[in-house]
Image (cartoon, rainbow, N blue to C red):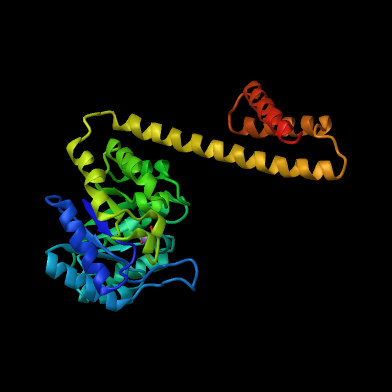
Length: 327
Ligand code: PEP
Ligand code: MN
């Protein structure tokens, strides 16, 4: 299942042009066309979407190109406007997915709805139980439900997605590499990873001219990039059967990535301490402080079942690099 289209519906011309170019690029690959009408932006001074007017442009693209259409809904009013406009798939965005009251209101508005399905993104914070709870709320509508892994803070959360996959293997799982990375250059490798993990599809942001996009400009790819991104995945259906091992390795990759990021952030603070020490004539090495924090780290490590010798060695390495930064 591929859901392709721009972050926002920017104008009638932009919506129709995007749909046409994707259709031409995808040739025989069916896709659902996406564009956001109401944009949950961080700042009130950025483009917020064209609202109901945008739904008319999506409906025109549906008619003109015989494609299914999808948009994000965040309130019951959005749901009724979207259903009236003939939107086939509705998705609940990461910010709405963080709020069970908002999600329940959408579920209530979707009772007896005539549409093809509801897609639920993971919440903005890493909370697999909340994501599953949202799936359960929406399932009560009787509509087909899909989960979209869009990550948190521009990082994949493979462990959260693995939890969903294990708890609900019956729910199709899609990847949204665009919001997961915030970077068009990272999309291809995330799609390959998703193929290895047997994801059931992808939502990808596509714009005829990403640099000019009114939202999420850095992460959108062009329609003519699509065949390169999608076809290898379709052609090379993974034969590797040990998907569980792949998931566990993805979790390790994620944790190592966080480990390096944490160590790098620690070194930055160390350097700032070094600047302070220099300004106040304090030596980089303070043996008493070192012994004190080593003992405390070993206590923390014991609470996590890590052997004291291992922690001591690791901490010495980190501390040595910290001192280097303070020279
Ligand atoms: C979107 O799909 O354009 C969007 C706003 O996504 P998310 O809710 O994942 O940020
Ligand atoms: Mn977007």
